[in-house]
Every structure is written in C-alpha cells, then in structure tokens.
Picture 1: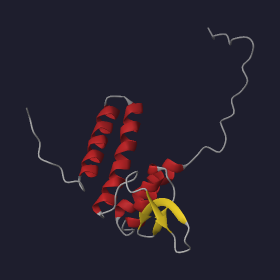
Picture 2 (picture 1 turned 180 degrees about the vertical axis):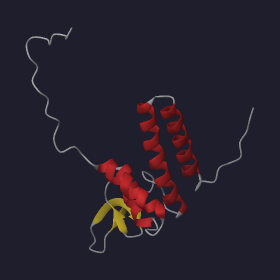
Picture 3 (picture 1 turned 135 degrees about the horizontal axis):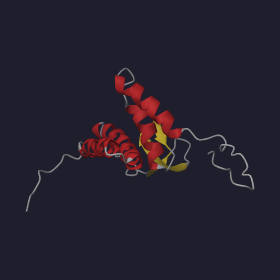
Length: 141
C-alpha cells in the first residue's frame, strides 16, 4: 500500500487546481474538447479557492454562517474582508471573495478579470434559425 504525505489544508486547493489544468491540457491535446473545458473550468475554480484558503478564509460553501448586522437584522452570508457575501451560490461567492482578496497590481488579476467576465456572460437572445423548407435540398452533381 502506498501512503502519501499529508497535504497542508491551505495548499490542497492549489494542487487540485493544477491537477484539473493538467487533465484539461491532456484532454485538449487528445481531441476531447468538452472534457477539456470541464476540467479547465474546475481548475479555474480551485485556483480561486487556493487564494481564499491561503488568506485564512474558509472556501465556500464552507463558512456560510448567520451574521447579525449593526441594525440588529440577522442574515446568512459568507464573512469576507469587505463585509459579507450574501449570495449562497458557492461559485459566485468564490469569485467575489477572490476579487476582494487578490492583489490588483499582480498579472494574475488581469487574467482573473478576463476569465470571470467570460464565465458570467449570458447570451442575450438565442440565435435565429432559418425555417426549414418542406423539400430537402438536392445535392449538386
């Protein structure tokens, strides 16, 4: 039986991210684009989680807690350095968390902005499809 050394809790997300990015690279090289996209997306998410954990915060969905506001109102949210993140969606919370904790002068922040914009863009309308004709098109000889 092979035993491995224990992984530090604050590094496990980083290693998971690298693992998914390696899998994405290999799948893309082998021609499996759909699998590559899946693993690249998860690699991106785990790298965001790595920075959150390295700064000492629980990685969403961990850390979802009940907070009492100064007004006395009770809310559920993720505690963060700039207040709270009330969105229960763990993916959205990771992006907001990372944005709050990241060093905006570093080159990785520019890449994060580009990827998070692509990740959150929604199609405004479905593409228009031309109606089908009742007769099939004839192949040209």
